[in-house]
Amino acid sequence: MADMMWAGRFSKEVDERVNDFNSSISFDARMYKHDIMGSIAHATMLGESGIIEMSESLAIIEGLKGILADLESGELAVDPNAEDIHMFVEAELTERIGYAGKRLHTARSRNDQVALDIRMYLRDEIDSIVKLAESLIETIIKLAEQNMTTIMPGYTHLQRAQPITFAHHVMAYAQMLLRDRERLQDAKKRMNVLPLGSGALASTTYPINRKRVCELLGFDDISQNSLDGVSDRDFCIELANVISILMMHLSRFSEEIVMWCSWEFKFIELDDAFATGSSIMPQKKNPDITELIRGKTGRVYGDLNTLLTMMKGTPLAYNKDMQEDKPAIFDAVDTVKLCLKTFVPMLDTMRVLPENMRNAAAKGFINATDCADYLVKKGLAFRDAYKITGTLVAKCIEKGLTLETLPLSEYKALCETFDNDVYDAINLETCVMQRKADGGPAPECVKAQIEYVKAKLS
Ligand code: ARG
Image (tube, rainbow, N blue to C red; front, side, top):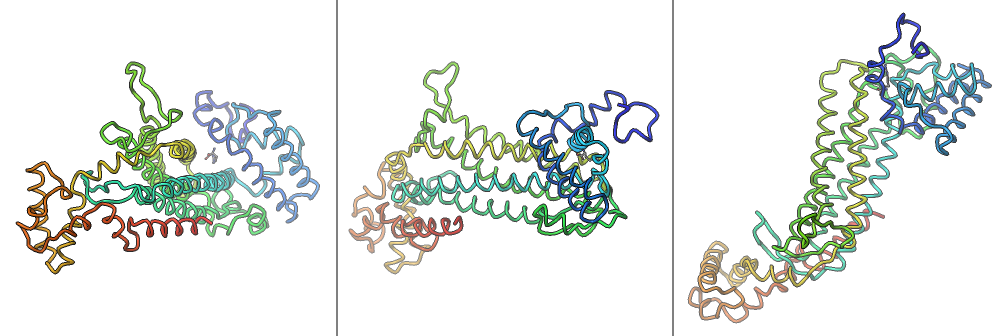
């Protein structure tokens, strides 16, 4: 450990246990590319500003490019004994180019370096999560377009409530995911601010050009306060929050799929490639993917909690606590990507069973509101119509009938206003077609929803 970069002040080597405990290389090695890109921009600026010699700047840049290429090709492996990725890259650089390598860390601290690296790493990850969310939205649209007239019961309290279409039901998730996508893009905006130049906490006495680095690395702006630049992790927390909401949506959808493929519902059947069997019960076909997504949602909420709790008691500016940001936010990012990557093809291959949905819709009196509305349209007050219909439903239950099969005489016995056209009014197809207020389940309205989502995506 005598060659620890910060060894100068110390008279003893670090205890091996402390060394392992302190190290973050096992989880921050994944940021190698962003670390190197950040260092290349920093070295470029140092050279241009005359803080180091131009020749040194060029040597550093060449050296860093070589390290990146060798890491990508597999020629060079990250040293698992390095303290962190920043130390590893710097040590490798100095090994390769000698003295000039030691000048890279001029006017920089690992505190602003790590704040930079995570932002760069996460903004790329946001882009890939957005792409995955978009492919899920597209898959939902496809499913909706195939089921514009597939009637199913809509539920409240998991009780059959009113008739809708399967297209309308799944398009609700497209709206949620559209907002998730917007939240991701929004989080990226606030994340995309350059902290480099904040130094350890109090900026630097060197004449650095932060705007130049900002431009080189594609940031929208530079951070305005050096303490804030190195010491907040709100952008990680915000992303974990956005991912948690997205996971919550996936989890609700998953829960519905778990129900829908049960024998009790049988609204859908999962493709064999996206279901699993039981080790003991030969008849089983289990929706493991959706259950795992439900389960992993809890794990992502845990990551969010980790970050919030980690930050709540840390004084300004950097504290080592903050090294714990990475396992948590990386886990949230990895998990949501994994879930989306599996959910999309599962949904895409899932078979919809319209007859079973239609059968379920035929039971449960989901056209009772329409029956009451029929009377209202003929002049009754809704409250009276509601009461009459309730009595009719009770009568149906007593006689084992539905509103469709109850004879007109029974209708008329309760209210003279009923006529033969009541059967048209409570026909499930009519009930759906008539729900054509903006945002409703009528196919023309769902078509408009789909157009809206498509326009947002393009
Ligand atoms: N590995 C550290 C982290 O992830 C890098 C910053 C270290 N800074 C320090 N002052 N020890 O936070």
